[in-house]
Image 1 (cartoon, rainbow, N blue to C red):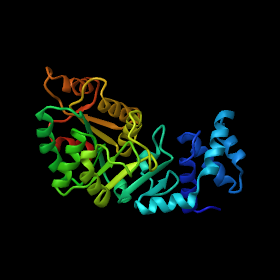
Image 2: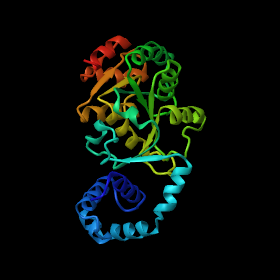
Image 3: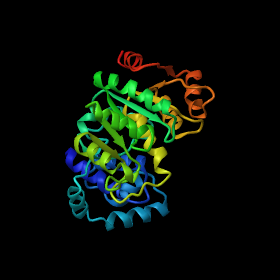
Image 4: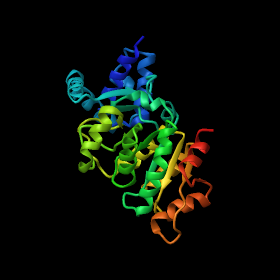
Length: 290
């Protein structure tokens, strides 16, 4: 019987392979657990791969030197945890499309604490800054770990203000942990990686491509039981995150805003649709920590 360290290594190998997705990796690791000696052909069959994808999978699997990969990750102090590992974030394990593997820097234990996701616009009005300055000290005092995406705007301010108030934060990025995105957040990313928690489902060498960020959003929403939305336009990434949270049965909190401000249109609509309206940090904490 394979132990969790061995299973994490196998999942790392599968994560680096082309031609398979997250759900197929999970099916493959289940097949390995049932039969540690199963062949590549049996792995492909267990995941129902099409003929074209089988060839891609076989070639990429055989081209990977796992020992060299592990050495590279150790050099960059990047760790990984599979969905089978007890350290894997519990709420994330239960979303519709969980990542089979998470790469991380920092304290993975933070993912087991009381988490609250915070999202909002990259471009926003001064109102957002004032809201964050009022909310975050209260949330930190209540021992909530704040989760965001390290993007410009609300994400960056959430992380920065949490650090200023000696709170704890988790950043989820849409690229490999050896990349800085956005580049101007390099110092902030390093601080989070060293003393907090930096997460990604993407292996080293993965660039911050546009289509990675909606996938990243499902992790932000899935890590916690609640998401706070501050200033979001219609059809924004923040609303995608909020809708993902709702789909998973999580709580969504929204800060109301000026009805003439397009940055508040999406947030106000969330309230109309049933999101919990919050006016201050105490109200949010009281509702969330019931």
